Amino acid sequence: MAIHCLQKTQKLNLSISEVWDFISSPKNLKEITPDYMGFEILTDLPEKMYAGQIIQYKVTPLLNIPMSWCTEITHVKEHEYFVDEQRQGPYKFWHHQHHIKPIKNGVEMLDIVHYQAPFGIIGELVTPLIVTKKLEEIFEYRFNKLIQLFGEYKEG
Image (cartoon, rainbow, N blue to C red; front, side):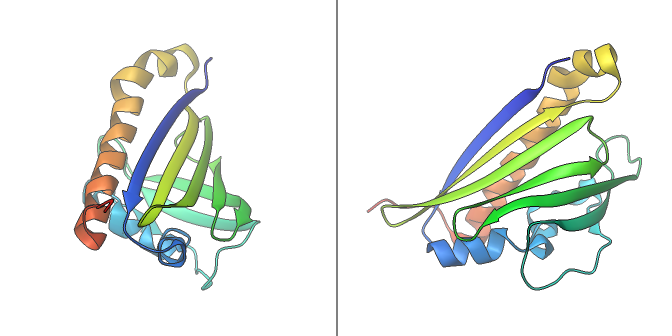
């Protein structure tokens, strides 16, 4: 079965430190996730993210069915990137890279998500119809929420 890849970029008129402080805090993830996902962090979180950190969530991605999701922060390079990988949850495979870099008047964020649905061939058949569509919808919500929080990017 194929591993799928979704890449999304967004520019913000913020400093690297401001973006890093926001995106590297798992506490902010709920704020940029659609309410219908029922996203709830179950883990007590320290102030700073670190490699090896385990975070447990409850989510309701489809049909209002609650699911457990557990991710590990596997890599962290402060003010540049971090990676979260699913250890238990709705995907057969999940690897999410969060990159940031300075650009003119701000920061460019790049998300690279490699994922695979569960359930073998059935999962593969529903990936474009349901899984990819749902991920696109979640990232669109996040894009708009970040504009609402921090404003539209202006180059000049």
